[in-house]
Length: 270
Image (cartoon, rainbow, N blue to C red; front, side, top):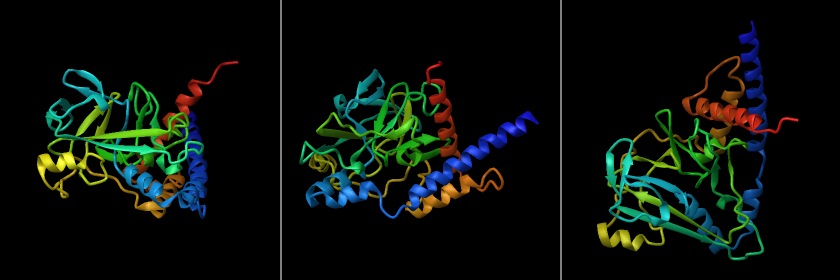
């Protein structure tokens, strides 16, 4: 009886949490889109284009065959342990810098990276704060899940970067798509090279036109926009009674519940 009541309590909290999320999804316009609409066209293009890429924020520590190294200090030819291909050699590192056109204003919301707090995914995974763009996929339970799908308001959040006027992102290209380790967490490498990188010419000189039909190393999850996200939240909201959740829904719910547990553990005892 006690277990049943506990499960009901967890389910009720999940329902309430997802109803709140549904309300925010159904809002006619977000602050992000309003701000982006007022941004100068050139600035908007840079922000939107760069952050559709799947990138690590400068300072992120990547596991190499010789230990951890900041992503900006890596070089072509360095060797990385990879989940599917054993040790792999870096073929190229794409750079995606962003710079404010007006230092007195905050970053456009769509430019905020995602912060994944220590132990957000599992004990000591990641080992330190991990910052990636919202489209960068983490490898979780056999799926590649974009970080933006996992934002929960506690351990996985948007980072406003108020102290910075410039942000620089990097992504690592191996010979084929794989999963590497950043701050101890498994994340994908670059799947498709395109002209959004400021050093794209370097890639073109070395390798010629990029292959745009590479095969992902694992299934890539997509919710299909706001409507898909809304359906996902509905599935989670009704799951205590009729559980029709898809794998991505279960992953997100688990990490949200883990985030709540960790945040409660960190609260000071009075």
